[in-house]
Amino acid sequence: MSQRSGERMRTTRGNSKEERLPRLPVSIFEKVLIGNVAVVLFGAVVGTLVTREFFRIQEAALAFGFSFGGVLLSAAVNYTLLRIAFRPLYQLRDTISKITQGDRQARAIESSDDPLIHDLSASFNQMVDALETSRREASRMIIETQEQERKRVARELHDETTQDLASLAIRTELLRSKLHDPLLVQAVAELQEEIERTLTEMRRITYDLRPSMLDDLGLAAAIHWYVQHRVDSEQVQVDLQVDELPRYDSSLETAVFRIIQEAVSNAVKYAQMHHLEIHVHEQPSGKQLQVLISDDGVGFDPSSVRTEASGRGLGLYGMRERAETIGAHLEIQSSPGNGTKILLVVPIPQEQWEERSDADARLVSG
Amino acid sequence: MPTRVLLADDHVIVRQGLAAILKDDDRFEVVAEADDGEQAVRLAKQLHPDVVVMDIRMPNKNGLEATKEIHEALPDCHVVILSMYDDQEYVRAALAAGASGYLVKNTAASHLLAAIEEVQNGLSYLDPMAAKRVIESYTHPSVGGTRSREVDLLTSREREILVLIAQGLTNAEIADRLTISIKTVQTHITNIMTKLNLHNRVDLTRYALQNGIAE
Ligand SMILES: Nc1ncnc2c1ncn2[C@@H]1O[C@H](COP(=O)(O)OP(=O)(O)OP(=O)(O)O)[C@@H](O)[C@H]1O
Ligand SMILES: [Mg+2]
Image (tube, rainbow over the protein chains, first blue to last red):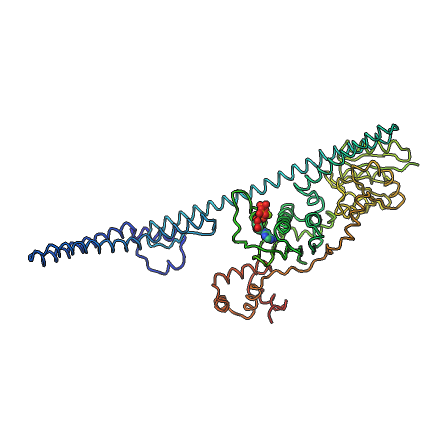
């Protein structure tokens, strides 16, 4: 029995401390059994002694008192033993409640002496790990699918609907130039105005879905465009410094743009700031992109933000997820009253900075 | 002799509309139409038009890349960019690629002829709305230039730890000095390494010395 559990120990993961301590594998069941046998044995021996000593004098009250004391004592011993025996279970319960409250890093301690408890903790951890992995996978897929879908709809609106409207505008202009009746000219002019309004609206929708600049001109242009449109420069002093950047992988450009977009949008929505700094710097070696978004606003406690069922608080969460998909390091530094600083360090995949020399032949960067 | 124009746009109806405008005026002649960027470059090299009117978003090769190639291969051929957008980012990119004119599609009908004439005479022509955007970008006081400085990557705690590493302290000693746990020290060091793209303590020490963080 001890042989078998010893082997199992080695196969499941354990920490170094438990390897150092010589272990006495006794299950809860055995502990309770041994404890109870000890109590019964103790009761029987002491009871017999007591009975032999006092029964002759026929002091029933005293005998009763001793029995009662014996029962209390055995209950106390039992209680203590069970407490000790069940401690790993209490710890497991605490871990579960931590996870329930949103601490995804919490794991059960796997160093119990009890093979049963040990196995329980180990499989519990495996289960939580597996759930965490599939949760990550699922959210990655949601983000990716949403982005693909946005891209598709934006492209369709741009390449089909907007183009149709534009050609309509061109043809009505052609028509107007051929008309002589002022009433007709007036009517066509009104028609043109309506087309123009619809076009403006379509452009807004398309940009909201996904700015075409990100695909046509790259990250730097898209960031410039977004910041200028999102931040009211009458209210906020903006320090926007973006290096001239080469074209990166579309997935990298998208992730970085979306993270900056969310950070800037949060700052505009919540910070009540006077200054906003946005720096996007490419390391001279081309191996790393450094992004800083910093406001001097009200700040907040990042550890207190939890994703709610209502879907609020998805912004910061999405930022972390996106950073993870491109292997970037994301830091959210903020506390109430001290503004907010968001730092993103993106490693550029080797094949992208190596082929940099022929990137010149590719696209004009914004 | 009429001005010879090449039209490049993947959207047939837009192209037809523009062609109709040009056909109405005998100062202009449409020599060819292209559906994509590659075809546009090929036809331009083959036919040597005076002016190319080019959409930005096209399959195979986008209008900006095509403009760059045409501009380099045929310096006498002028390109007018045709776009859905009047944002200054697009205008700047078009001009950087070598275009001499920029038109926004839906108002292109009223400006097309003037634009072609101007660029053919070696001048530039911007759609009035696009021109306004570009001018705004210069008068916009709050938005800074395009060269950024190195981002300050380290927190003050991380800086502190970097100094101690450079002084040769072990993790345990650093933990002791700052009264934090060894695990926290390790986490900080991992973060510093990720951010600075360095991989060992020797590199960290060198970085600290070179950047005047420690001496
Ligand atoms: N720059 C900031 N300044 C002050 N508070 C901020 C800042 N950024 C975020 N917060 C706070 O953090 C909370 C969570 O932000 P997060 O972006 O995750 O969610 P949200 O903006 O409320 O909703 P969503 O982004 O999903 O629309 C915000 O509600 C806000 O209270
Ligand atoms: Mg948000």
